[in-house]
Each structure stands twice: as C-alpha cells, then as structure tokens.
Image 1: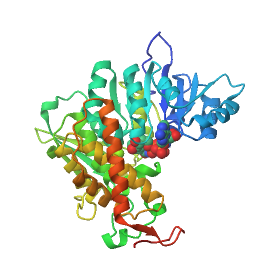
Image 2: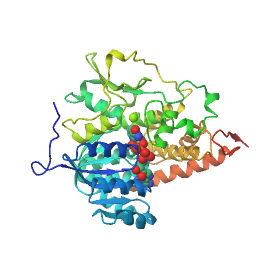
Image 3: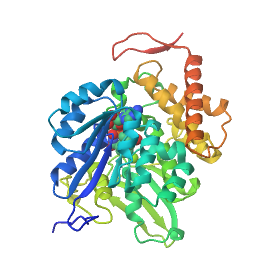
Image 4: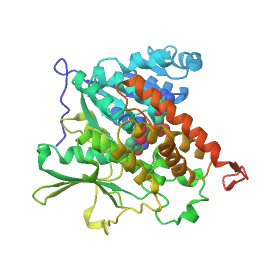
Length: 412
Ligand code: NAD
Ligand code: MG
C-alpha cells in the first residue's frame, strides 16, 4: 500500500516546499525525497550559503521559483549557472529572508547554526509547517522562537531524529501523562577513548561519525556530545518538559531514535535505520506518511540493542548544556554561540578537541547574560557569546605544531 500525501491548497495541487540550506546534509536528503516523488511536491525556493554549483544543479533539476545564494559576491556566478533555466537567481541576506518568507506548505529549516535564526523565523511566519532541523534556532532563541511560532499558527514538526521519534511517540497522547523523555545517543566516534586519547584527535577523526553522515559542525558536536546537550534544550522547548525529566542514554546501534515513558509504565520507542530521510519524510508528509527508500530494519538480524549511561566526566559538554538550560535566561544563547566559535576553531586546527568544552565552560562562567525578549536581544547575546569565546580561545594560548592532519596542538 502506498501512503498518500494529503494535498494542500487546491485539490490535487502538489505540496509547495522550500528548502533552506539545500546543499547541506539535511538539504540533500530532502532533495532526494522530493526528486523521488515529483508529482507530490513543487519546489518554491532553494537556498545555500556558498556552494553555487550544488545549488544551481539542484535548481536546474527541481525548478524552484527562486534559488538564493547567501554570499552576495556569488550572485553573478549563480545567475550564470542558472541562465536559460527559468529559475530566478538571487543573493544576499535580504534575498534569503525574502525567499524564506514565501508562503509554502512546508519549509525545511536545514541551515546550520544561529546564522539560520532569521531565515528560519521568516519561514516560520509564512509556512504552514516548519520542518525544523536547525536545532541551534531553538537553543539560542527558545522562548522568542516559540512566541513567533505561536503568533503565526505555523505547525512545527521536528526533523532532528530524536525529536521526530518523540513527536511520533506522542501522537494522540496527553502531555500530562508523560513521565520522561529518553533521548538516545550513539556515543559518537570517541565513545571508547580516554580523555588523554581525545586530546590528540584531529578534525578528520571527529567528523567521521560511526552511524550518521552529517555536516562538519554537527559531527563535531556529536563527538563532544554537545549535540546531545543541544538536543536536551531542544526537547525542553519542543515538548515543554522539565530538564530533569529528559534523560540521555547511549545506544550505539542507533536503531531506537528516542523514547517516551508514560505514567502507566509504558515506554514507546520509535525505531528505524539511521537515515535522516525518515524523519524528513515524516515532516514533509505530516500528518500523513510517505514512502521512502530507507533500508528496512531486519529484526531477525539485529544482534543486540544495548544501552548505557553517558559519561559526563569524559564528555563534559552534555553537563554544560544542562547547566545552561537550568540557569535559563540568556545562558543557552551563550552556550550555543561559544560552542559554534569553539567548533569552528577546532575545525581550523586552532584549538584541540578537549578545548571545545573548556571554551564553553569559560564563557558560561565569565558572562552574565540578560534574558532575551526578542530577536534583536538574541542576536546581541549571540554576538556577546562569540566575543567571549574568541577571548577564551586567546586565553588558552594554543598553537599548531604541525599543519598535517596528524599534527598536534600544544600549549605554548
Ligand atoms: P551542513 O553543514 O551539511 O549544511 C548546512 C547548510 O546550511 C548548507 O546548505 C549551507 O549552505 C547552509 N548555510 C551554512 N551557513 C549558512 C549561513 N551563514 N547562511 C545561510 N545558509 C547557510 O549541515 P547539516 O548537517 O545539514 O545540518 C543542518 C542543521 O540540521 C544543523 O542545525 C544540524 O544540527 C541539524 N541536523 C542535522 C542532521 C544531519 O544528519 N545532518 C541531523 C539532525 C539535525
Ligand atoms: Mg539528533
């Protein structure tokens, strides 16, 4: 039986979709699904930051009304790459915001980092459904973001696999019957390493995730387990659940994507192969379902599903995120900004892997943020966190001893 996607607007009209961050990992998985079911979807806008070639290739194939490249200096290259295609080329921040604000059935928020906040909010104000992958939006702007969503009446369907799992497990359930949310974590590529071993890992090792193929930033976040910390904050906002009722459990097979425990002792788990096309499809077709080519689970061959508690001594980022959430106000915004700067510095080999947590910890300890009340406040606080993180990185006094991938980072 083939699932039918409910059409919106005029009867029989395909769903109109925008993809923000169309060239990234989430973006590419989304485009793959759209290409497989061209009669059910029509693409309104595709955006990317700087990958002109990938954006133009996707636009030539999917024929959106507009394709936007974030960097204004790349406008000429995009226009040339799209000439004769009938797709409008645009560039720069205003064009990105304009494209994001086009009314659509589903806007996919696949930009990485707080840079996605304004475009994602523009989409949230004008789409019927916001398919949200960009967790940093909720982490840095939680209450502000939710207030905007409430004003527009847009439905938020999470794309992050854990939150999609919880969203699915909660369907038809009463919130007051939920006892705990249980986020599963693969443990990342360094789950078996000691702190001493982690001190020397390279960016290349950190982005080689054992179970998921993702963008560089979230891959490093998975390796430090900051990703799971950000996801605790994301779950707090999405499901209005107190921090001390959101558990994290290590589950290396990544078959159970998360669970909900209810007051009667029942626990609902959502399972599937580790492939983001399933949670993306859930959001694209919601409240229906659509077919995907994702590998099916073969239970007879699943040797074992194992679980263990996270080790917060080896992975302090999880505790730092919990601390920021408990402190509330502007602390999650600072945490996110500091982490983004620290991860970028690590990817550029300016600091070591363990320094990421150190930088975030120093920023949380040194700053006294005010609680943000609107987007301007969030952006100001984000800038404050970035400045503080750069200062903290300077204070570490790191230098790179060798530029090859195996090079060590040492203290001078
Ligand atoms: P990615 O780096 O692969 O792609 C990021 C996309 O955002 C690209 O299209 C890029 O052009 C665009 N972009 C980057 N900087 C931008 C800027 N300043 N302005 C506008 N656009 C910009 O990232 P990803 O792995 O696809 O992750 C995207 C988001 O989804 C992140 O928030 C991540 O945490 C979340 N997420 C990703 C996965 C995954 O499997 N990749 C899973 C869960 C959640
Ligand atoms: Mg996730």
